[in-house]
Structure formats: C-alpha cells, structure tokens
Image (cartoon, rainbow, N blue to C red; front, side):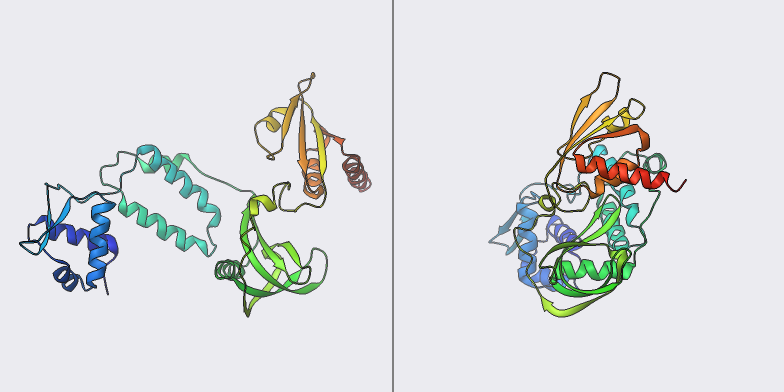
Length: 319
C-alpha cells in the first residue's frame, strides 16, 4: 500500500536533503509507487511548496539548490486557529448524524498538520465557547445518509412520505440538495408527481430506495435563489410587502438580528421598531409573529392581518 501524499513527499524531501541525488525511478521503487507519481510529487513540492528542487544531469538525480532547514508545514495564525475551534463547536449540531465521523476525521487531519509551536491554550477556548439548541429534530440517520448520497451521486429515489396530518404517499424524486435550515433538515427535490421542485422533511420520510435511474441536476438550480423570498423553506407563491410593528419591550431583539435579506428597520417615536419585509410566502412569517404574542402588531398585508386575528381568536377560544 502506498503512503499518503504528504508522508511520501516528506520522504522525498529527506532523500534529497541528505544529498543522495535520488532520481524518480529509485524513489518510486523505495516508496512503492509509479515514477509518474514521484514526478507529480516533485512538481508539487517545487511549484506549490516553493522548495528549490532541480535535476542534476551529471549525477542523474534531484538536489536542492540552496539549504532547506525543514519541510514546509501548515502555517496558521492564532486567529485562524480560534476560528477552527469555533467551527468545530458549531459542528456539534451534527453529532449523531452520518456526517459526524467524516467531520471528526477531517478535524483530526487538520490537527496533525498544525505546527507544534502554536501558542494557544485550546483547552481554555473549548471551555469558553459553545453552541446550544433547545429543540433537536428527530431524524432517522440512515435516511439522512441515503438522501445525502443520492443527491451527491445523482440517483433518483422512491420515497414513502407522510404529509403533515395526512396519510403516507409514494413519491419519486430527484434529490437536488439536502440542507440544514435554522437547525432543521430539508430535502429539496424535483417531484415527478408535481413536476416541480418540492421541499421534503426527512423526519417524515418512512423509507427511501433507489429506483435504479439517474439524473443530472440542472445547472440553473441554486438553493439561495430558490429560497430568496422565503422566511424559511417555503418557496415563492406570491409577492407580499410585510410590515410589522414591535413595541419597545422587544425592539432591541428585533434590531439585533438580520431576519431576512429584504428587511428594513424603521424606529418609531415610542421606542419601538417597524420591520419591513418582501416575502414570497406568508406561512412561516405568520407562525413567527404569533411567537411574539402581544408585542407584535401586523400592519400589512391585509391577508396576514386577518390570518393573525383568526389564529389569536382560535387560541382565546380554548381558554
């Protein structure tokens, strides 16, 4: 079995640095790879890593034209290392998913590549930074893995899918994208039945099997554009100018976040704030507004005002 590329290049560096003038054939034999592999390694070391390697026609081998103290290592600043720690903490939301092992493997490789002289107390940082969620989605990890692999390989799937409050349906879909939006997993796929892109919730998928057919993801598909006017994952079904007034008790919470790319904030005379949005669907914004209780007043559009009034009346009727 051949050595990993980095380990192989370190061995090449040692042989050249020892003044042995090794050639590609000898290195290939010693490292149990082809001469073309050695030549690619040397080109990478010379052109990408900046090592002063040249070939000596008289001695039939490679040498360094100037002293090289050590093999180049990954250079990383303290700020970049802190960013890596923060990223690793953020990835804790994927604990228990099929991505966990792969992510941990990637971080271990990065850790091994770091120079030994980095002056940063990682233990201290891991104790002072964390991410927490109060509601974790219940998903079948095997389903998530099937969806992710099918999307990457362009394989059509047959799903048994339970609609909210409804019966189980069979759907044949072309999975374009598996995304985590606000902590929840969603599958964006071309639905053969609807002949359009639909959003599926993995926790409602009872089974997912490959049909044996493949597809080519359209080059024009862009999830960011698909969800541009959405307040979550619902795609455009209209064009709505939304205005919501928040009283002074929660105004700072509204100012502290960017809730949507289209948002505009207008301070009110009483210390409150007005949030203006342009949305393609009202379904998710209605639920969000209800969560603010009596601190939020919908001003526009009329259909959203009526929807909030109907929901509030239904809530009051239960008490």
